[in-house]
Length: 270
Image (cartoon, rainbow, N blue to C red):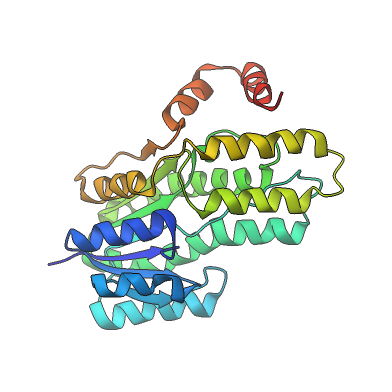
């Protein structure tokens, strides 16, 4: 029996590539996103598309109910919807900060709540939360984004042990640099929030760094393959890391004390 997969943020990047890969592998795939028109190219591949806003309760409930009415179960949830709200913590309006956490944390958490009853009934399930290496360490001017990913990491660790007795696995994917709309959106948010900023000099250096780093990012399919590996593993790892500089930075963060790690990070802005 084909596994039924729900992927959020399927309109672009890692979400779209994951939907394509899993559909080609024989999964029954539902791709969800706000921008339904961006998923039209998925439909000829047999992927079913849903309009879903992960900050809207009715939208999430309706989407999950549609899948359950058709398939009677959801075996795999890939919480991929997310974005980066960059700017100095002082500069970013609290309303924007709350929206960042609504999308990256609370939207994922609510979908987890909605799919768990089906997974418990089946005695099997995989919840794949797309975090970031930015959930392991923080860089200046990404504070609200890092806060959301640190929160998602902690949520995943707690959830993993809660649902393990029901045959459900919780996996965190930690991408590094990946070619996607994410980088441009983070850059745009950074510039927007810092027009009159007291931090403008350093922010301009970060903006330049982001532009250069983007040229070395890996293709989204690299992460899609990692997600498939996690889904198909009988005993998946708790965390999977891939993408430009991902493994190196995670290792460096483990090895270096805070003060020295700060010096390494700030050295990038000179």
